[in-house]
Length: 384
Image (cartoon, rainbow, N blue to C red; front, side, top):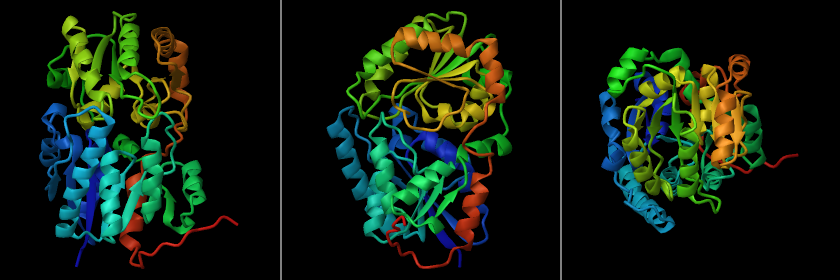
């Protein structure tokens, strides 16, 4: 009999990273894919991106509503509580042999704590990383201690997971999953992309994604307004502006984003969700990627495209020479974009080495999952 393997996804970006792993599990002779969807995927406010999962040919085995329409920390905590209740029912019904989760968001924490109590082993992707500007940092490490398998994106992250007491034989450096798209996913042409977006791409453009900084006392509205002021310094560049995640303060950014686009509809387009194929196509054609998304640190450098990383949200991650770091004020952001757009920096980006692997992460994960048939029992690994 095939072993049931459940994959959890709560956000559009996370699903894009999980796509090829889900495809390969579905095609496996030894595993049966179960898909659990929650969080932003089910929200009309964030584009009901669960529809894209089904359009890609996947069957959703459980939909767990958990996201309250609230920007506050209390709202997030209540959403986690709702999620835990729903995940308990979903996991009890599906009873997977293993649960796969990626990253560090509160939705993932809610399902992993349910799986822990229900004795369902967890395979955790992208552990060992540091993002000092978001409470996601603590969530990631907490999930590490509740997980059995660990598939990390770089060797320093593998060493950090082992440092946290996880056995080296269960920690695998497979690289970043998003890079598999470089080898396996077709991209859209500029004309196809423009038609899909219903937005003229007849000149240079920037891709912009900004999320609130949740671990520090930083006003997301002030920081986002500084970013918009910086973008005004580059009127010759069009702007593809994507929505933030459902974090504390994220909903306060959305009306600012929409208002900015309405003022210059021929220059700026707001997008709740690009989807991973359009996103990769946009990245490949952009003059630079601007904001504070993890994708700008992990995936974008593989395209030879400059990243302008704003503020402290991603502080602590390994980064390529193609990433320009700057403070969250209009002058610093503007100067960073100006540097990123120079010919000399473009040459730097072409030669930059991405520390997150070569695009074969899914194969490494599948090799481990397919061959493991032992006991799911953990002991704390002390460093000698």
